[in-house]
Amino acid sequence: MKILDQELSPKDFEGFANQNLSIDALSEGFSKASIDFYKKRTPLWQNLKSLFHIAGLSNRSIKKNGILVKGTEITSSILGEAIEYFSRAFCNFYAQDELIQHGYCTWSEITNYYSSFFGIHSLLRLQGRCITRMWRPKGKQVYIFPYNLHDHEYVVCTKGVEGKSAHEAAWSLYYDVYDGFIYVENLNFESIFKKKYVGTPEEEMDFRNKVNYEPYQGYEEIRDPTKIPAIIKSYAEKKFTSNEIEMLSRLTTDPDYRYYARSALRIIFCYSLFMRIAQKNKELNSLFVNCRNTLSDFLDQAKPRNENGMLGRKLQNMLDLRLD
Image 1 (cartoon, helix red, strand yellow):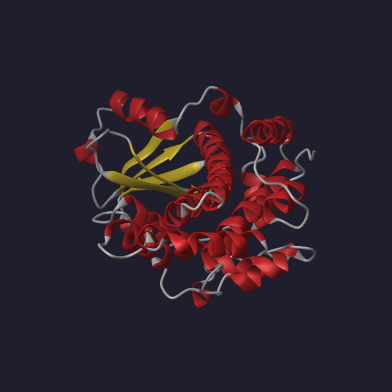
Image 2: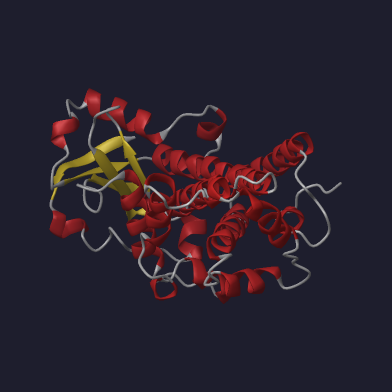
């Protein structure tokens, strides 16, 4: 891992900041990535901070100009973090299921938000991108994106994240990057990454903020507990019998199920991209066998509702997990 340019002009990288890479380019770029960084739980920011320290660079060194770095370690770290955030999205999806089945309706919606939030972080990394802080806890937020994924060259800068919260930056960049992405294998996934299908890129973040922080918004289950049985009944009776991805895609604009459907689709979409990339990376393919076993073991211990037709069970099947 090395630094190629400490003063890369914004004109040299502005066309790469929101560029989406094709699935073939991603498969090739990640083909040599090692899974050691995932096994050792080594985050990208830690490696880059060490590199910058040796070069005499500090938090103040990251300005409007970019810093161009190179190394397969960067690609490997980004892929490892993509798996980590995918697993977090999966965990939160089943957590929100559990919460609503016990009447915690608003907290279920908030947990569902985090399933999607972790999902978009996984998807950003599956485009070779990362939003992070190297100097913690008060260091500036930086954006890391591919300059040449095939040669493992990346730009570190503040473009797209400066002056934004961590959540706002993630949602904005996610839609900017994926809006032009084409996944011909299943066009139904476009409902979770094309801007034309949402009001604003920050729509889900704004909803979370409203119901969680604004007075008298959300928490209807506290003001009128008699509503809880009907909410649970409606939720439990939502069955998915066939064409799950197509059905979820239609639900992404439904007033009652849109955020639930989006979080589920993002998990499935992440998994689909992982499987495509794993076709050219034997290490990743082996790791995902272990990951599926771990997620299956998690569900064995957590014991979520698992009736036929419920999305939680369908999701296990779509992710090739072990079923009871």
